[in-house]
Length: 138
Image (cartoon, rainbow, N blue to C red; front, side, top):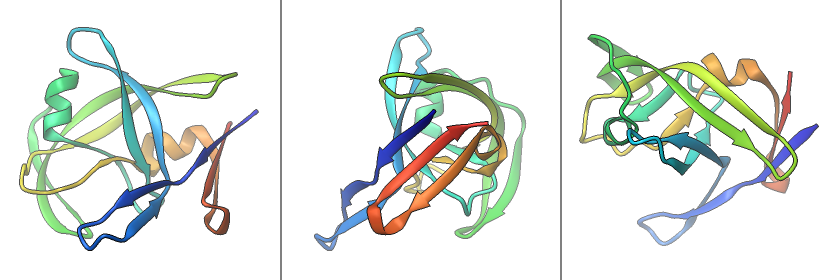
């Protein structure tokens, strides 16, 4: 089956709306409590990227610090494994994937679901004009 997500409209500083393929996922915090998160599905991102403060809330175990480069330039990251669930009313898929934790607190970056670990689990269709994202489990 296919899970369909409508794009989320997020207000920008200039009062316009950003229409983007954010989806709701479930993860567990450090105490084992399930929390709902909003994540950007980003076909231009190689990896799942987690902001540092979210990684702390989730209690993720972090590897050694290293440098990586992206569209915003070079930054420090630490590797981890991220467990989360993608679901609809009828189906639920648990994903365990490698991820990078952004160590730069000054970067305003959302939780990003990139190709490595996420796109491999689904056939993904973006319908920009309809503002919808379709996920079909492989």
